[in-house]
Length: 517
Image 1 (cartoon, rainbow, N blue to C red):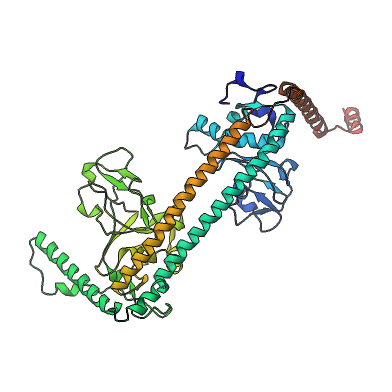
Image 2: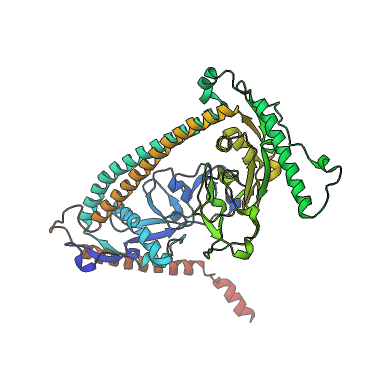
């Protein structure tokens, strides 16, 4: 308890959290016990609303593990939280407490919500993923009189419901903005965003002509690269060296949708003159002059140049591992399939240079294809579905390969239309980003308001004290007496069970044995 005990309001007292209720941990379920029907297994995902694939259990279960509407639950691992269950009857999974509260249940739940973060930071720091039962029980909390607990719970219900409603409304706006962003990008990739532009520019050079120049440029770059290799080795190019060039894969258009007039289908292989992964050197958090991106730095349309590890000077000798402006980055490996194939364009790299790891592919784009337009394409539902289907799971990671990327088909608009698309999309994304930033600020304000309300509630400033209320110290005395009585009853029940389970010797059998003896 962060508040000074001597500053507790009239009638309040301090108590250990463990004495305010019984905290019953859930049952551990093996995967083999999961069923498609029966009573649902209540997991942390069900408390947070993130579970869309519930599991069920059909066997007998102890009454203490059954959860019914109105029960008070606490998740103490992974995602920490306190909840009043509003779903159907189910069975409690491990890492969740079902609480039999000895004080006002609504007050108890709000109190736990308020202090969970403090317990987490105090016990294991910000990286902790669970709270130990011992630390939970030993946490000191303020306890008001029972009547005041009920007044506080009523006030919190009213105030926090308004905050929750405002927060839910802001979340809905954020969802709508995400949907709008997706619709803008989809319209850009499919050509509907610039339909009016095409009507005003009927004579724009078609993408088929642009592609011819790009393929010629791609071949020229390969030739120059081969000549440099021969030159470095001091070798004269053999007569047939140009025949080693492999033409890039062409798109299979048999199942692709029709493109707007003047557009062409191309493969990623055709519009990149190089695609490779970065350094495989082991990096660390020790700060040096040689930062290297982490795979998590690349997300859809953005690169976080602060999300880095570091290499030593001896690990940083290959110039090809350094990013250049205009590079196309694609995540090839991630713990989640949602982040495999994330694509973004490098703007201006940080001063001093920055490298990329082997978990990221870096592509060099043939002039003629707008890199930002390509990154829009990587977020289109058709392409995302292909990438997610191609991703292979290895050692807990999802990954894609160059052979998955090379045949990917992209729409290529005329060069002038690519520039028009870029201007419109970036203008719209700028507005969306600004609105999202404002929403984030407002959501932060609602969270601060919630914390301020809770802080007032648990320091006696939310509702007035009534000197006629029975002091909390008397409530705790009764709780202690009742707890002692329950312990005695439980011990007596265990002794009875043991006597009942003890084998009884048949008197007649014993007499017969005595006679034989």
